Image (cartoon, rainbow, N blue to C red; front, side, top):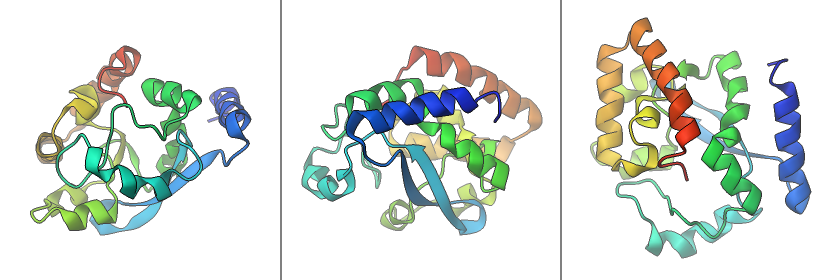
Length: 182
């Protein structure tokens, strides 16, 4: 964390200087055994992005209960860079240090997303959520929601230190290539 402090500070200043709004965006996410926790990100959208979400639901580009738009008009110029490089995810290192997340595991969903999916696999919640997941190295946002869940279940059922290391090492080139990051 100390080594990364200059990067945290630089990103925080970039976010704040864009519109003087909040630096972090915090949501409640669902972790291991269904326990909710605060999930911070560097803010990559306009301040009132959540209020605008319903008006954009008709142009949602992903299936299932999640919401994503490749060229989301709510994303700021700075935010687009942060998302492409995954720098917006850095504050989640605090979640790892607190024990709410691990370095590798399924990405945590919102409770509303879990409730909207009638056949949500609760087995997915049997492990801590991760900063990096199998989906991140295998297609990111280009995968369907069902492919995302299948990937997570495959991880849960075969997880090991060797698999975690392989996923973590594959995450580096995946982030550099920015494929499917939006």
